[in-house]
Amino acid sequence: MRIFMDTANVDEIRRGAAMGVVDGVTTNPSLLAKEGVEYRDRVLEIAEVVDGPISAECISETADEIVEEARRIAAWHDQVVVKIPLTEEGLAAISRVSAEGIEVNTTLIFSANQALLAARAGATFVSPFVGRLNDAGHDGMEVVREIVQIFELFDIETEVLAASLRGQRDVTEAALAGSHVATLPPAVLFGMIKHPLTDQGIERFLADAKSYKPV
Ligand code: G3P
Image (cartoon, rainbow, N blue to C red):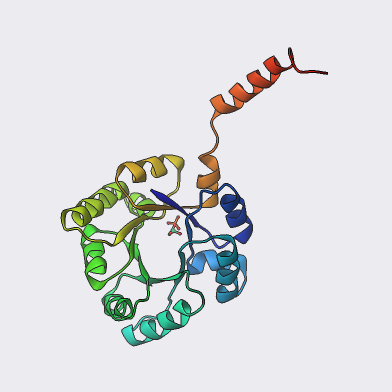
């Protein structure tokens, strides 16, 4: 499973990329709003740090406007994947821009049916929002499992990108569900490193090493 970072904070992305484990980045208007920077500038900055897909989101609502916006966003950089929300107008736009070779990450997916439609329209990625499904009392990871199973059954090439992941266990579950990608908030990514037994082990090794270290 590939790991993307779900943030528009370039310092966090740099920290993740330095570990050699970041395959891409996803952003959205809410993440950009926290940064107070121009969307295009930030995407170009991220492209200097990460060599992989960078999702940038459309905010238009009609198919024609989404198509126009998607073309504009896609032209920012060849790593850009255009994020389009799953609506009727969005699907019409996805099928049009995908036919032009623009890569699309269909966002705000909450059911396997929505994912199937996005895939049929030609999306490169579908993003089921696991945490928000759980917040609403559903089993978010079950939706990921269903999408993975359907895509496998029909040899659909669209990749499943598990999004809205809130904790480290979600990452393990997404991998076990067969998700192709998981996009992680920085706290989840960096939290994955830590284990109290690792810290204890290092402490003990360092203490024991004092008995033979040259002084
Ligand atoms: O990738 C989508 C993500 O940013 C949404 O996460 O925690 O706002 O549901 P959350």
